[in-house]
Image (cartoon, rainbow over all chains, first blue to last red; front, side, top):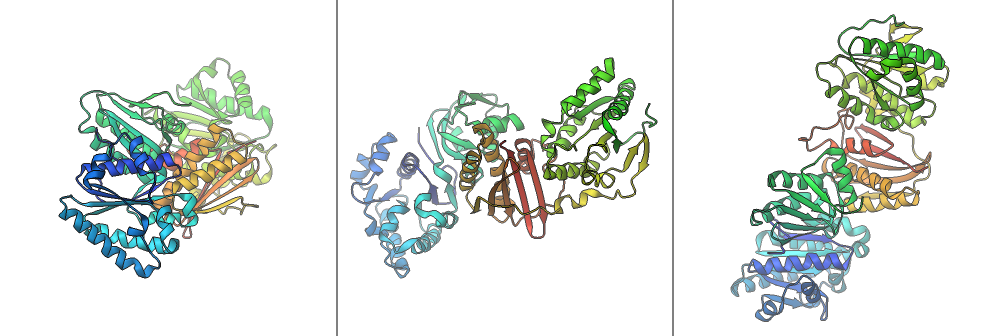
Length: 274
Length: 307
C-alpha cells in the first residue's frame, strides 16, 4: 500500500508544523514517497549528513534506487536557498523554474522541493527574507509543476510562526500525519483539528477506494487530540463505510469525550486511555 | 392549595417564597396537581430541596422527574438544553416543571448567567405546552439577586397570587450585550492563528491552576472549539487571555466576529448541523460560560473550577 500523505488535494504548497523529529520524519517520508510514486523528481534540501535518508529508512522506504537514478536528489541549502538579501529572490525563483524545466526534460512529471525552514534560515538573511521568499514560491507553485514542503518548528519561528503558516494554502498542523498503512487501515498521528480535518476527510475517502471489502481500522494510537471538526470526519467516514464496521484503535480521551456528548455510535472505540 | 389553574401554552412564572416551609408547601402542591392531572412533571433543584419535596409528595413523588441543579445546573448555560431535551422526548404532552437556579451559593457571575438563562427561557420554550415555576427565596437572597426577576418572568407569584410583571419586556434582547468586568491579573495573553498554540496555552494554565487531567482536557476541548469559531467566523484569528478568579481558571477568547442569536449554544444542536455545536459543547464541558457580542466583536469566557 502507498503511504501517501496527500490525497485529492489541489494545492502543492504544504506547510508542516512539527515539534518532534518523529513527526518531521513521518511527514517528510510520506511526502517524498508520494512524489516519487507520482513520477516526480524530489529534491530534499539539507546539509551533507542530514537526517532524511534515516527518515526514509524508518518509513520502510528503499531510497537507493531513486537516489541512483536521479529521481531523488539531496541538495545542500546554499545551492537552492541562498538568500543574502531579499534582492536575491528573483534569482532563486529563476533557479527553481530551471530545476522544474530540467525535471520535465528528464522525463519526470514534475518537481518537488522540500526543506526544514530551520535549515533554510542558515543560508538566509533572517526570518523576514525567508517569509518573503515563501510568498514568492507560493506564486510559483500555481504556474509551474512544482510542489513544496516546508517544515516549521515553533521553537525556531516563535512569534513568526503564524505568518509562516498563513503563506501556505495547505497545512499539516503539528505533525499531523495520515497514512494508509495496510488494506483497510489508516493511521492518523498528531493532532486532528479544524485546520486539517477537511484534508483528512478527503484522504480517508481516497484511501478507502482501494481498501477492499473488509472492516476498516482507524489507527489513532499516535494521535493526541481530536476536536469536533475532526470527530465529524471520522464519523462521516464510518457512515460511508457502513455496513462495514469501523474500529478506532487507541482513541485519544478528547475523542471519547466528544462522542459521549454528541453521539457517533458508528465508531467502535478500542483501547486507549479513558 | 394552589389557587392557580392550568391554561394551555407556555407559562414561565417566578414564585417568591420566604423560607423552606413555604417553598415545600407551594412547590409540592404545584407538582402534585400536575401528577394528578396526568401531566409530565420535572423539578430542577438542589438535592436537599428535592429530598424535602419527595417527602412532602409521598406517593406522588413517583410521577416527578428530577434534574440535579448542582450537577446539570452547575453551569446555568446548560439548563435550557437539558429542559429542552426533556420536553423533546415528550411530544404532545402537557408539561409542568419547577426550576430554582438562583441561590446564595452562586457567584455573582453565575447569578448573572442564571438571569440570562431565565431571560432566554421565554424564547426557547415559546410554543411549548409547558408551565414552569421558578422559586426565589426572598428570605435568603440578597436584593441584587432578586432585581431581575420581574424583568425575566412574564408573571410573578407572591403569597400564592400571580401578578403580570409590569417590567417584563423581551429581556433576552440584551443578554449578549451585558457588560463583563475586566479581570485583575491576567496570566497569559496570546494572539492566535494556530489552534495548537491555543491548546498548549490552555493545557499549561489548567495544569498550573491545579486542574486534574480529565478536567484540563475538558477545558482544552472547550476553548479549542471557541477558538475554531474565531478561525472560521471571527476573521481567522483571535486573542486568548487566561487568568484565575474565584477558585476557577478562566479562558477568554476574543475575536472580530459578531453573534446575532442570543440562544447560541443553549440548545442541543441537531446532529446534521455543522456549525453551532462548539458553544453548546463548551457549556457542557465548563462550569460557566459567558458569551457577549456587539459591534466591537465577540468575547467568550470559559470557567473551570479548580477548588
